[in-house]
Image 1: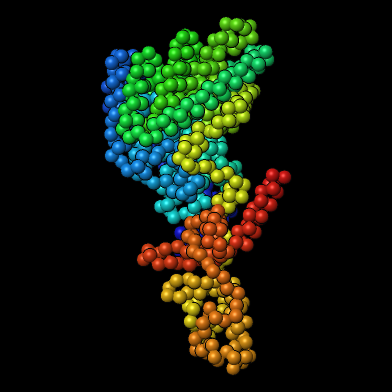
Image 2: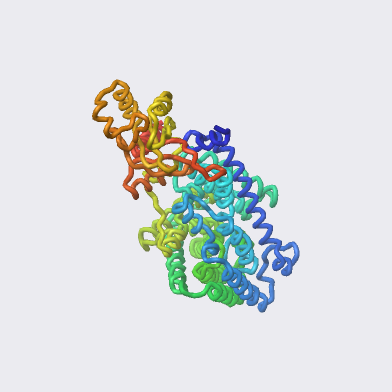
Length: 596
């Protein structure tokens, strides 16, 4: 067996932490690199150079006609390109990643990522109200999926690499490595396990290092130091921030879904063109809505915007993002939710400073709280938002009010308005659901290679007794019976040994001579414990195997891999009992770790 085969078999289990950590680090470099390239592409495009060389996306200083034409023409161009693509290639973004992870074992097509890179970059560069984080997650996750396929790793390892790519993408976008880890675990992988934690952490670190190398060590937002709660009398006000933030988030999720349903039958070029026109019209009165808008967010954090500007920017971004997301422009919603949260928080800070000047913090403090509150409420990711809040501010004093506001907003969305997370809603509109089950989570984290029994031999259905005695010398547990190069059944090897022993001793020879030729034994006719069997690829997880057994009402499978000449190389056998035992063992081991 080659070295790469041994590594693949090792990765199929749950004890390959060191090897998986190395591969996770490589994945982080690839994912972080793809995000750095994407940011360079969006910030150095011909469109942005035409605005002002060396500047950020300062859309506010553009002429009114340019603000109208830029997103309009951009929407039409994006729609034209998308129209030329196959429908399956148009699937991009975080919802696409979640779909492929839950229904296709993390197999993310590279062509979709290429479309995301160029079309997503063009969408952002043309000033549409979208963020770059969603495309970044898609690119990073595809980097992990591609690496897993190239190395032909088990699917459980590929799933972890998708999470590694996501973590590196978030880390590279905001220069927040810890938030990248929590985001990947909370939203993409949807589990917390040591086997995935370590590789994802290393990938996130790699993403942060690359973005710091390319763009400097400063975080995405310029946050003032020494932010703190002025008085505990502010806590009821943070409750109000959470309630209003949760209400705005619920309205955003609901209205985006309505726009999606209304426009479902529209041609893709019509949807993107309408979105571009709407953004252009809104930008006539609120130019801040164009692009990622981080310059406006920084101004709000520093208290540099008037109240009327904050209100207009909030309302304009709210409408523009609903239209862009609902009409399927290939961009993200994380950036827009941070923008809207900053505007909402700053508005609340202004009112608090006016009515309660002695018990109100700086309005930039509320802007920071609002950012993470709204992002958390829309994505239903409270822990990721809280960690992002801590990393962005580097100030533990902000955690207490942040926790309070974030939790209240999440409860308002899920319990009061009964809304699901934004990406869950997007998947639901396509008839898909994210499957979250404790049993499934355990089974999908373990590959068949780590559980199968390898003491297996293969024999033809019609076999010579001497050949059977030879293959039994290694004391196999199972015998796979082949006919016409197809595996047709699974036999317990001890039954074959018992039959040969009786045959050699001459027991019941006269009865046997009628049905059994001493020179050719029919393995499907002798008395033995046999069962039907299915095939499962070496890369499969226990979840895939269990589901396939359930569908076929079969309790055993042989594990194979196709060689270079398209022939099956058989590695072992796995039964339903092995899967059940493995689940019980994994849960018991997990309980011991929790107790410790």
